Length: 501
Image (cartoon, rainbow, N blue to C red):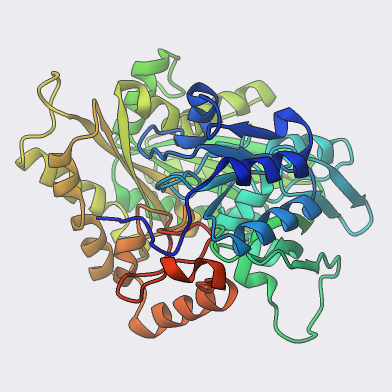
C-alpha cells in the first residue's frame, strides 16, 4: 500500500498564485485549490484505460523550456511533487498522479523547431503529437521512425520518456538509436541543452540515454532531436491465416529470408483478438475462413515492382510449403489501411466490454504464445471467464511484434475485479521471469510494475537505478521545512514519486 511521502508539502493558494503569475494566461493553469475545478481536472487525473486515478488539484501547461525550468526550481525549493504528462496515453499509470501531485502538461509546447532535409534531422518541442510530425515529414518525403496506435494523441516527449517501441521498430530500430539529442529540465530547474544534430558524438558519457525510458523520474524532456529516414515510395501489406504458432514462427523465418532489407513489420494476432475486433466493428474479415493465428507482413522500399514481386513470391512459397492456409495482398492504399485496422484496432476494441488488464512483455520467441495459453487456462480454472455478467473476464488474447519478441497479453473484462488481479499478479511476472523474459518491453514500469521490477532486474541493477534517481532527484529539505522531516519514513524526491523504482 502506497503512503503519502512525509517529505512533500501540501499545495496552498500562495503556491498557485506564483504559478499564475509565472504562466500568465488563464488557460495555462487549471486551479482546483482556490476553486472547484473537478470536471476540468478529471482528464488529467485519469488514464485513458480508466484504471488509474489521481487527485491533483493543479495542472500547469507551460509553453517553453524556461517556464518548466522556473516551475521545477520553485517546486524543488518548496518540496512540491510533480508528474510530467504528455498525451496521457500510457498503459502503466506513469503519467497520472498517485495522490495530489502537480501535473505539468506539455501540450502547449508543440513547435517544430527545425528540419534538415539532407540529414533527415528533426528538432521539435516535447509536446508535438506523433501523427502531426509524421504528416509534416510526409510533405518533405521523410517518415518518423516511430509508429504507435496512439499516434493521434501521444507526444514525442512522452514517447522518449517511456522509450516507446511500436510498429516500425523492426525496420528503424529503437529511440535509443534514433534520438540524436535531448533538451531536459532537471528537478532543480537546471536546463540540460544536449540537442545534438550529429549521428556521431563520442565526447564523454552519452548522458541522454539515461533520460530515454526514465518516465519523468529524473527530469522533464522539453526538446528532441531525432533522425528521420527517407519515406518509402513502395509499401506492400499481406494478411495471413495460420493454424499454429509453430507455423507463425516458420512464416517469420521465411519472411526474413525472402524479404530481407524491405521487411518493415511482422505483426502477430491470435484468433480470439480478431474475433473480438469483428464483434465490435462488424467489419468484413480480410480472409474467408477463421484461423487460430493471423500475421500482418509489411514491406517498405523504393521499387514498387521489385517489392511486389518479392511479396508475391513469399505468399506463393508459404502456401506451397503449407506454412499458411490462406493469405491476401493489399492492392491499394485503402486496402493497406483496412488490413492494418485489424491489428491497430485491437486495443480499442478490447475495451468495449469495460476494462482491460494489459501486459507488455518480451519473451523468447519459442515460448511467446505459451503465456497466453497458460493465462487463459488459469483464469478458466478459477471460473472467471464466461459469456454472462457474473463472469468478470470476457477473454484472454495475445498479439504483438514478432520481430521484437514483444507480446501484448490482454485480458478483456467487464469490470476491474480483485479476483482477476489475484490470479494475474504475480503469476504473469513469475512466468516471464522463469522463461528469461522482460516484464516491460515498451510500455515502461510506471505505477503498475514498480513492485515487480526484481522479476527482470538483479539487485545490482536496481541499486544502480536508485542511485541514479537519488543523484538527479535527491530528497531535498530546505531549512524552513526541517520541522516536517523525519528519518523513520521512506522519503521521495519531487519527480513522479511513488513510481518506477
